[in-house]
Image (cartoon, rainbow, N blue to C red; front, side):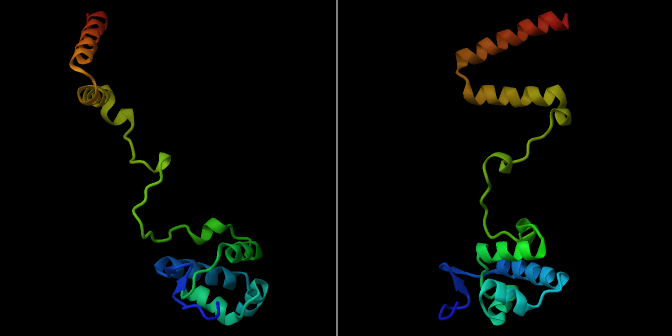
Length: 143
């Protein structure tokens, strides 16, 4: 981008993530036997600009990465797999902390978890009701 500081794009300074993506672009370009000139022409830019993407000096746009992905037959996610992270954002859902399987602690482990939850979240009266229910269950199955 002419006239734009080569270390900034969309208000952000480039970093090791841009270098990582750029290295993967260069690697795939070479594997596909494509010249920088050929790829740059498909982007409508100079080979010098493409070289800045490959070095991570400039950040490549999603549109250009999509074009390159289709040119090389490599899925877009390839360019991001293993990329270093600069944030501590944890996505909700599957990004939550890992939970141990029931078999790790058996039913005693489950009882500890349920007991902790009841102690922290139930009123005194509700805790007594749960304890009564557990004693009744114990008498039915424990003999």
